[in-house]
Length: 448
Image 1 (cartoon, one colour):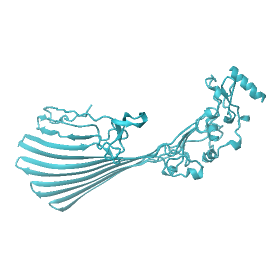
Image 2: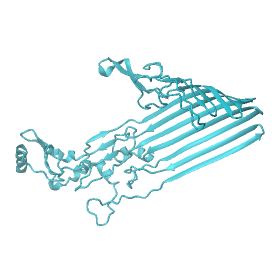
Image 3: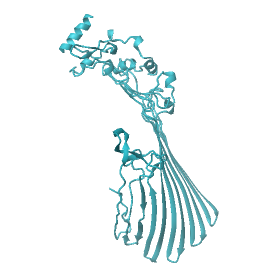
Image 4: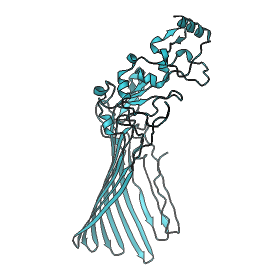
């Protein structure tokens, strides 16, 4: 009682001394006469066993024991695990001739990579290690039919998949934290939480971040079909063709869904030390706050599963005209229709200047979602049509006229759509050169 009264008087007079690494009891918080809050340290700087949080103790049981001979309380764990990386490229190609008029070609390419990230040497479920096995698949099939010596039909089919996982061990997201630890805070019902516990330069602690810090799996697909027919007549080689393409981007993101728990020294520090010059000393301890189960701040995120798709159609007609032995003129017409990428469930939104905003008292300027039906704008945010004239060229002189009407990129801000319509620019470009090795400048320019 006398010690408490003496400390209260010293705090009120601004004469109290603070001791480095002292752990203060948050249950002893009191207020001095000048309104400043203060705490009493734990006797002997030891937290009573009865005060230790049962969830923290179960998590602590996963922490590996010191393995550095002769080390003190600090830097006593050898963190240099071994790991292996792998990379492989495989390709197979085959041709099959049904007869002299029919030919089938098949090509298959696969790239596989195993490149571990966040190799920390911690055991499951504390580890943040990522073992992403990225894959790229590229199958192609081509069929050629020689209808006559001057008429050839071609059909090509292709597919590209890029699988890019940047995620912690899948078992970290299925870990039964409620049953094993008694922790309930996951947005997906299971999973080990992410822990961030600061350390003390003299008192130690648990330095690495623990748990599944990343849970993102993205997939990029491109499916393409092209058909053309080539006709040779005299000095002219005519080619008529069409193509179709679908791009897909899918993202499954579980990052932050199991809960992020951040601890600090403030929960076991002394509030009266705020604003005081301690000469580099630190009071309270982040690991002590963890053992008491006192989280400084916590977040949890919902799982995210998005899928965007966009389609592209094209038609072209071209003629290679061999004027003489030294001069060939190539000219043609191409038409393209390329739509903006859309989320398949129409969950993309943007600013709606005529939509009431309930968060602002009904003022105009709410959120509008693309698509059709209740709560939708009965529209899609962005489409583009492109109709350039292309390839007027000669072996010595190249000249390219073009008109282009285009919007932005295919995946323009995939998670946050543009709030204004894309501007359309009309451009016309001419270029001439005497060098046959130079290619004509493109006539299509992206909008500002």
